[in-house]
Image (cartoon, rainbow, N blue to C red; front, side, top):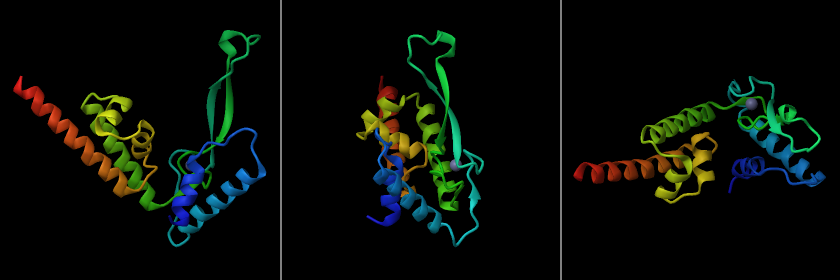
Length: 161
Ligand SMILES: [Zn+2]
């Protein structure tokens, strides 16, 4: 496992409560590893956060005394695409494009994420990572091949009826 694999794995893992100094130090290290990876090339502004490094997410608030209409809170979170770096590599841009193609193919086949993952024998979370471009191009290509095999096989079965 390379440092880059390790860094990406750390940043993919949600923080657990209570957040420890160790978790924060690990994340700091991981972001440094990813930032170093791209020093040789011109960084591409992250398309998700537009270089802001954080995004604002709306999260439900489950508190009884809060009126129904107000039970959402704006929470600033580390950008899931660039992991708080603000920029991404050209390879990452390619991965995002490949992931989008994969998602379009799945949707064209009218397959839900869970169903598609079950049919091709991988975890829904892994399919989701592939569609987000959060894994390597090779991994995305491998998932796409599995999906192709399933779609072609299913279409052939339907054609026989
Ligand atoms: Zn970002």
